[in-house]
Length: 431
Image 1 (cartoon, rainbow, N blue to C red):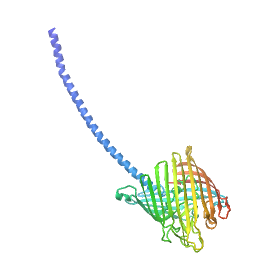
Image 2: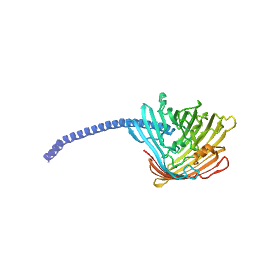
Image 3: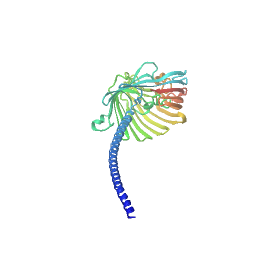
Image 4: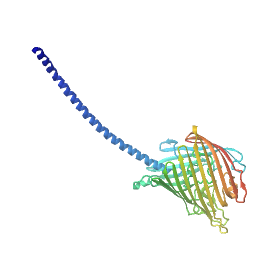
């Protein structure tokens, strides 16, 4: 028995040594794994911190770029997609249409037409200096097939970087849209939910200098321009000044106030203002002895947006005056517009707009009427337009739409304007 116990004890002792060695090796391996895990965790923490820093830089750049885009939208240069030829970007927009109006309208015999056709060019010049230009191949206002120069300017972006601020101060110089009101920002066929515009339809292009920028929820644009209808030469040293201040409290609401003075315009040489109004212009209403005329304007705009549509409205006041030596031709003009758009299922949408102009002493308000008659010969005291339309968006680059508009008014002599109703269809596109 003793011999058996001795053998068992000897066997246990002989196997205990490698077991203890194995335990020791296992503990060492565990310690090494724990150490390696700690090192990996430290590396992951460092990489996470670097990733957070990189993410913040990207967000800051996106915020700065968004600020530049918002400020740029204060002028109506369209969003350029198009084709890139090295550093030069080329794009275009247009619309092909069918129009018909009443017998006293601008299209009494029904007509197919190229409603719009424009080419846009953008190119970087030096650092934050860019070139922008567009050529009008066809517009609704031009009744010929000639080429016309649209906007053309140098854009000096982020001048405010000189004092360490993004987008507070930018500058443009050249031929520029007149920054009064907001309808001109969406009057191109691809951007306009309807085919028509409001009755007032303020827009114009004029050589000059423009300042624009933003700070927080506010943005601004201010332009000093020639003011006259020549488009090239200024016949009076008094300049046009127009500007707008906007406030966007959140993505659903937008508000702005605009003001403008055309400056004194030469009645014989300028003849017209650069700013369009009522499908016409501001022109002299004085006798042949009148040498200068002018208009001062103010307007308020607001927009409410939701995911599937919007309502926008504006209203304003214009005061006309001249230096006619034989008569007082000063008069007040009031105008307003309200527009709504609602997206429908399957890419359809519906839109409506009501607008009106009131001028107690009469003013050249063309509307849908014959231009030669209602701009040069007959003054109107009031005119209203109700536009109803619907459309289908294939994409943001192709839209088809149709509209019927009723237009009614009264001439200064008391006769009614009731033969100008409009029907139209259009396919609008961009590339």
